[in-house]
Image 1 (cartoon, rainbow, N blue to C red):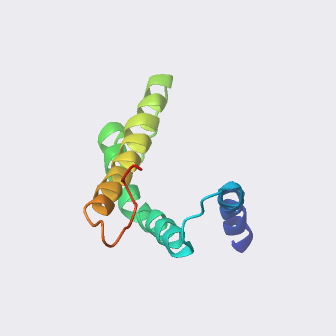
Image 2 (cartoon, rainbow, N blue to C red; image 1 turned 90 degrees about the vertical axis):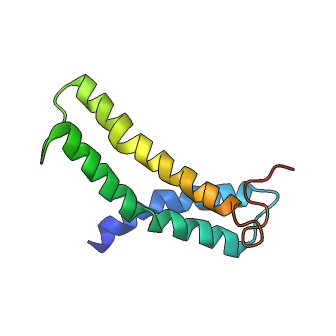
Length: 107
């Protein structure tokens, strides 16, 4: 079980470290930790919404059996809810400029 968790997290951690090492204008560590924590925390509501949409589209325990069904699942069940939750987090960060300096502002 621990090996599976390690294998699942390793690619994300390696990519994060690679990008962070290449970054010439590094953000403060607390901001990165906060962003990763919010990203992890948002998984639960996203999974709940995705499960509900999947049930509406394919029924209880159903899975797509065609290319159109698979495409619909990828788009409506996975992509749309995940991106909407990211947008909500981003808008929430923009609404609090003193708590989140520099987030969502150009220049």
